[in-house]
Image 1: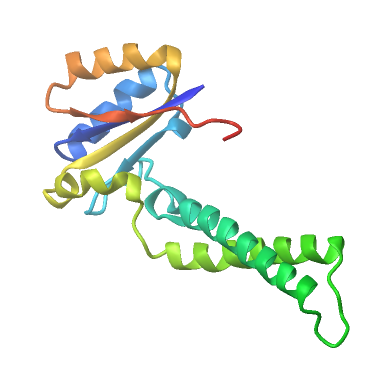
Image 2: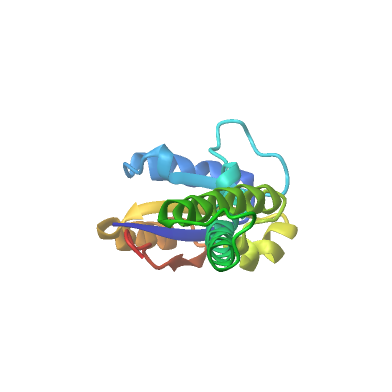
Length: 169
């Protein structure tokens, strides 16, 4: 199971040094992400659009709300038929699915302009010019990497660890 760790680093130079050490410690570059306000060197792997914005959270919320609204419309159609058109089980499911898809799409489009709420606690550090390091590690490697960061990079401050995401919430 993967764990997400956060570290704030003083500048892009230290970010490059940390990247080299993490690669030597056999952390895959796919699991290393950096985020900063200023432009960083091209060789540093930056956080993608899904990580920087709230698209995933927005899509999940929109799907749930859209399904509820679709269900409410289907139930309303079942009790108050329009021009003799009644809603059967298939129609109710279809309206729920349509509402979930439409709600997910609309909400994700809006959330694309919103910064990721999980990264809100690092906004002050990023505004000061610091660099955020995000690591996705197996649970067995967390202690080793934390010890390595504390020993070799004392200027890096540990920003916390997210609890593991459940496979079936």
